[in-house]
Length: 299
Ligand SMILES: [Mg+2]
Image (cartoon, rainbow, N blue to C red; front, side):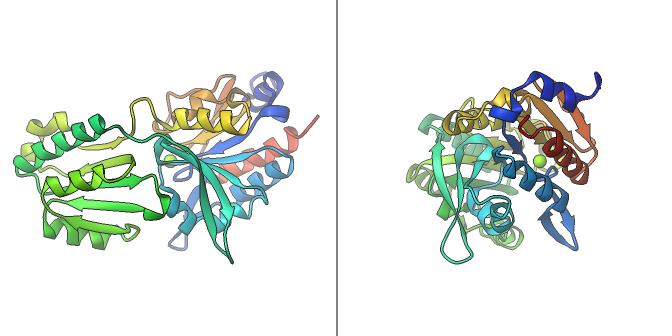
């Protein structure tokens, strides 16, 4: 009992009154089944039980809202009749998943933190340097505040755009042209996250190390922890009394939660405020959530 992180967390926190369960999606709550990505049924079951106990259940993911709405919206909205709180784009946008017309699910924003013009300029400077250096294997993904616009991708050349169209089927639009065309597009709306995907040939890599080959750009200070804090403030639950579940270093929100549940083989630096534990996979997370719902109900 004294070595049991879940028991320690429940004894030291106000989870039963003020806590929520916040989970990452990929690698944490999702697995692959018959060639499709799904919410693991054990996780779905555990979250349903917790929602029935009155504990808010929230998602915290890098994925953009339209993607979640299209892929898992139905599964997630079946967990509870309540609106489902949702942190997207590495903390840049929070909102609720709500039932829409017919069988659909829609996203309703709570708040968003756009990147500043100076931050966009910095990204474009890097992009210009790469293009000038002859790096053609370069894609810029961007996500605006209007969630219905989804994912847009820019490539410097036509071949790159065609390959991206083929590869990233979830994109709403793939276009190509000079960096100036990208600049105009980024200036035309509130942009929440930019993702730079660069594949640099081995022999040129030294020269471009400063360009951080793969990086997600949000407004300074915005990450999954910041997003989780804003969501907790808005919805009135207490993050240090909550359970956070994630599988990679990007899941910084685990460090703000009372119990950090690390899923999978990677040992993470993010430790919970009261306790930390590790489960091997999404099925293991499901079993833990089931235990939490049995032991973490109102006393
Ligand atoms: Mg993950």
